[in-house]
Length: 143
Image (tube, rainbow, N blue to C red; front, side, top):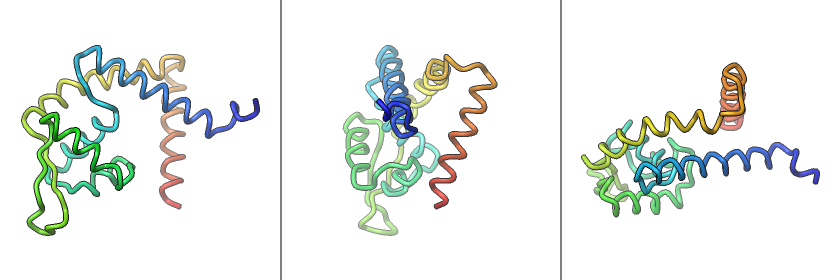
């Protein structure tokens, strides 16, 4: 099939593989988190008190569905949400102590699983792939 060689299909397959590796390694280590939840926690860790729309922007996620991601993190006790004092319509989020501990414990696993995702590539190929991926993302977001 012709579609199997198209960039969109290959990128989608790589995303599926990345998600599968993340989910498998996280579960093996006893964590019940998705890669999107982990990315949201990273954004919140980076900017405590950020609002939900800001989290969505930082991780390039849909604003309409980020609330559900945050809801699940709140339900797990990893994130605390409060009404913004600056804008009563906005909800600010912060990692809880449990959320920070979870993030700190999972980060080394996430760093290691990058090697699993890129295993078929030699070190120089990995650098080139990551540089090209950044170039594509930067070009798409600049448009």
